[in-house]
Image (cartoon, rainbow, N blue to C red; front, side):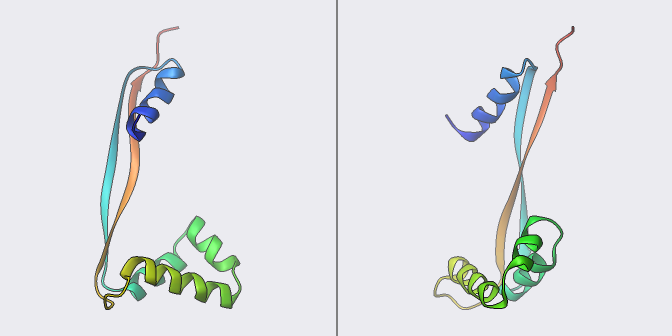
Length: 95
């Protein structure tokens, strides 16, 4: 069963009717790895909290690991990532 079907099943299992789910995919474009790192390390929410909790050495290790994972052996350049959120629309059954 794929993620969308499992997600829809959660809503159906809680007695909602006419459940419709949709993945919302938003491309996030960065001019370089440094652009991505600057935004992620200064963003609100979980990434900033986690990154700021690390020692400088661990932060640098994370940064280099992420750079390698995203760029591999290719030179730095533009990076496009896809952010995904799930939307749901359903009807609450009459009482």
